[in-house]
Length: 163
Image (cartoon, rainbow, N blue to C red; front, side, top):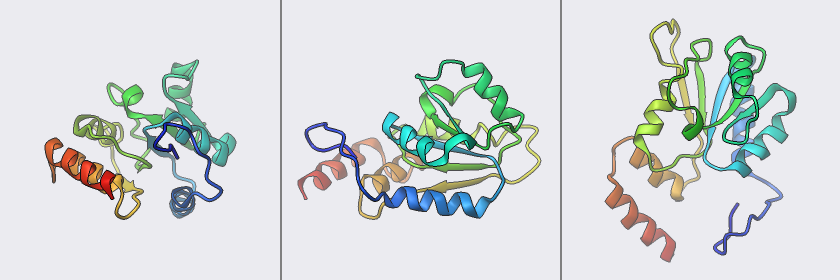
C-alpha cells in the first residue's frame, strides 16, 4: 500500500492476495496472466507464487525469453504491466487473465484482454477483476469498461479522497 505521503507501507495481511490465491486455486494448472499497475504489486505476487511465476515489465532483463517460456507453457503465471506487454503479443495457449489492479486507460485494458482473445484462440477466455468495495478499484473499473468517463472518474476520486 502507498500512504498519502508516498511512502510504501507493507501490510501484514493483504485481502487481494488472499483472493488472488483463491482464484489461482480455482483455475488449477491453467496458465494465467496477472495484470498489475505497480512494481510493488508485481514483486509481492512473484514472491507469493515463487518459481511458477515470472514478471514481465520494464525491469525484466530478458523479455524475449520470458515471452517464449510463457508462450510454450514453461511458466504458469505471467505477472505483467499492461504498459510493457499490451501490444503485439499473442498468448492463445492462455485463457485466464486476472486484473489485480486497473488504471484509467480503457485502451490498455482492451489491449491487455486482447493478448489471449485473438485469432487462433479456440477456447473461451475468462477475465477476473480483483476489486475492493468502495475503493478506487470501482472507479477505475467504471472507466475501463466505459461506464463512466474520465471527467466523472476525477470527480469521484476527488469526492472519495475527501472522505
